[in-house]
Image 1 (tube, helix red, strand yellow):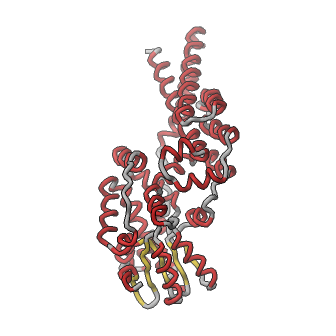
Image 2 (cartoon, rainbow, N blue to C red; image 1 turned 90 degrees about the vertical axis):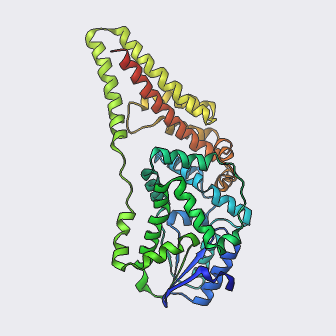
Image 3 (cartoon, rainbow, N blue to C red; image 1 turned 180 degrees about the vertical axis):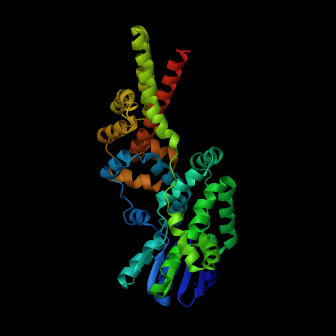
Length: 388
């Protein structure tokens, strides 16, 4: 393993960093060797609880979890999280190793040796939300285009990736070119968070920290700061981004506006205008919500449920038509264990979200909600234009 010494960094006698490629069999062997040789008191790994769970249970998406994702309104976030894993998963498939194999190996070896394990990465959902919040519309479109429309089948030499720090630097620079604000959250913020967590556990003994090789230089720079400065940033870096106020305002404004228009017609005794406005509301809500579910290749019953639910759910800020359509899709075409496994492999966006049953449930939920929202806004615009 001497050829990979550049990926082994001793900060001092009680802290060693190991830089790995998360999909390399060489990294797995390197981790095993270093745990045995270094004999740490603590093994720290670049994982959060949710990522650890997904590595331990690669088929962990079941119908109960899907139902929770739907009711919690997290379908769109899971889609983004999955899309961000495309390249890493492709690299894992190409190399014969699953992403995170070396991190799981480290945890298993530590458990066997009764060595405590510390998860030092920020929760992946918080990271994604902060990245999405930080990006402008232009960056979001670039990221989605790169993740979902890029058919480049470039193969990576994983051993070269592990050896060549310049190659890693170039990959990091590519992130910044596409979306500098997202790059800041995904790379710089996480460097600071990982460093803060390492500083937080420094007093517990001899630490072996296993992180992605691309984070090595950033972590080293952050560790030069005082422990107090690094740890004091953890709460700030772990904050959920504030949700914009306009969606809440819109959800309340839409039913109020519709009620006002209908109330005005009722006051004036214009029954035909009331019927026209209600027809516009019902038709556009139902049509666009159903169309969204149809684009997602939802079951015919899911299309009908989404269409019927939309005119009603659009009047209630606590409900969404996509939830009903997604739940129906889950019941009418329940995913199997193989669907869950294939979804997590993420071979391509189309096959995962339009052919796979797990992905289809998520897409039905997301596109059903988008269609319902579009229907509500368009209906109100037409109703308003009819009054001026």
